[in-house]
Length: 166
Image (cartoon, rainbow, N blue to C red; front, top):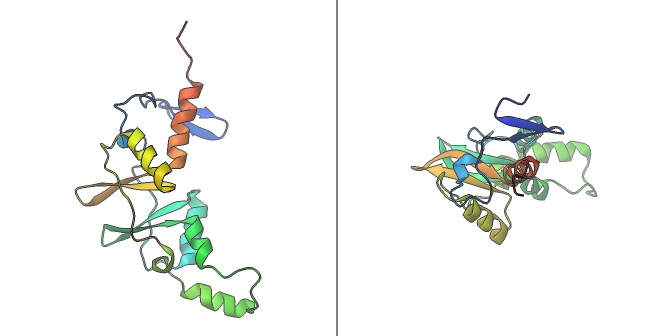
């Protein structure tokens, strides 16, 4: 349900309290998800995948003892799962998949931004490095996650706002 600071555009809630996307003062903190769903390195891969589906997200920051140690993307999970064309029996497949943890699939060497990073700089980094999400870190602690979806919601919100130009 949309709150008073969101407009509903189809089934997507679009924030309306965020500065204009072209505003050079717009920072990551204006757009990021401040309470993202996370996983630990020891979370079984099938649980992480279920968590992603349940929360409708494509990236999970990976935390160990409260510290960011990696990022798990849906495509990372696809790379560690056996091919559908495998000759393994379903019991062998289940056995193998049950042994996989987030640690086996996550990307450990990740790029991060701070809450005060400009949104345009964050977008530039995402495009240049072909990544779909940036963990947001402040004082060695993860405080949020910026995803392509967050940026697209802001773009859509800007498009939905009436133009006052003559």
